[in-house]
Amino acid sequence: MKKYLSHSVEETENIGQEFAKTLKPGDVVAMYGGLGAGKTAFVRGMAKHLCPDVLVTSPTFTIMLEYTGKYRVCHFDMYRISTFDDLYNIGYFDCIDSDAICIIEWSENIPFGLPDRYIKLTINALEDEVREITAEEIK
Image (cartoon, rainbow, N blue to C red):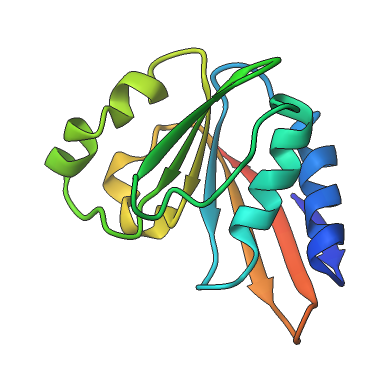
């Protein structure tokens, strides 16, 4: 398990960028954390390494955004997803079963849809700008 402490949005993005250097095609990053915890800021940081020329926004209303750069990245927001059929209909399993790096915000909403192996990334807000970020591999 790796732990990080961030004191700003910029620091969260920087940690995300460094974390992304450990990822390889086919990895799944299941993100956990409350509203405003900094999940999308962390994803922006990951994208600086994985797909440097893309603009990352939260896929809250589109559910899934795909980025291409050094790697193919599928970025999901599962806030409004609650069933296996929902996952199937948005093409989730096509991405999970590919060589794309999949980043899933609000993973707590789809425990039934996570693969056997993934990286659980949790962001907890400790104070105004302070975030504790933990990453652990689940097998």
